[in-house]
View (cartoon, rainbow, N blue to C red):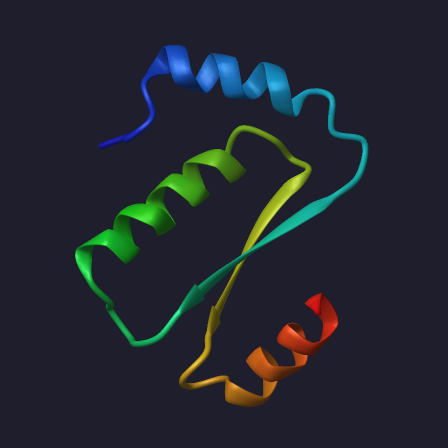
Length: 77
């Protein structure tokens, strides 16, 4: 079941139409499975990515991928 309504999808699709570059959204998790709120956030991100071919989602588990997480943190700061 989709979390975003059709009206919301249309509005977001309109905003995303202006994207000119590829965008990767990083979704940080801590455990396999995770709490329900993490699963909801992941579903929303996946729905968002489905609205534009310019958006991709990359999941980073900062417990299992500690080295990678630390590298990303260094790039951001």
